[in-house]
Length: 319
Image (tube, rainbow, N blue to C red):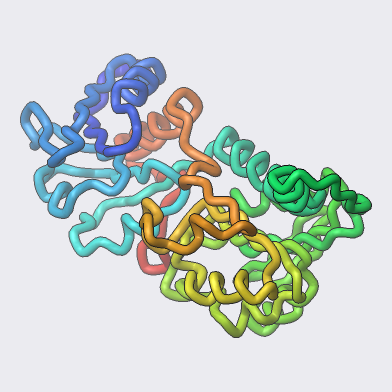
């Protein structure tokens, strides 16, 4: 796409580096006018009427109303719950990013988390701190049942990667899916059996009205006693108080948590001090400007040609 785009693209994120995205977008489309909004308040230099496209991550309320000629909103990531929950989202196509590097980054992080629990690394970390030589006989991967809760783009990639490493992988989704080497379950009626058969469960569901609080006290209790719990999706999919209680009781032996109900995780959260919890700051997978930019440019081309965009989100469904 070398011709001049019909309008400018505005970029907003308080956590991403705008200049990196501008450079990547202009490398993919040298004629694209990219304007970086100020992180503090979303202010953008130039005529707002020239802006046709918005690439954003959690912009301030009222941000979109500044641009009367907006044609496309691109979410700066795969999870769109924060965007579609807004009451100021314009009536234009909304897309999410879906590119191989994000899937690979997520799959490798999930693999790390699963291997850490499957090979009892937290046990050895505690023993080291206490100066104890503590032997636990290792198990083979196929002796560990790993349940991936959510089989979208990222969940499917993680499930396939775990299966490739020999784990006994099962996956659950709202509707029927089929993945080679993965036992697939679907529908709420299948969820109790799926959970009961998972030694390690990995939460990879989008946050929607149907999934908010899905992993509550009742469903956490359906996991085998001593199960390991990983959440790389959204904190609000899990009832955090119920999870803390399950970790304290030992029903869930260990957890790796990358996402939380409130982020950053408040200093007073008991999760920080729990010996059986690893806290990471929502970094399992992020969008890479260089590899995501071509997809964004392609969707701009499609909008200008009157074609269907890629990876369009249905705000009513939440993904």
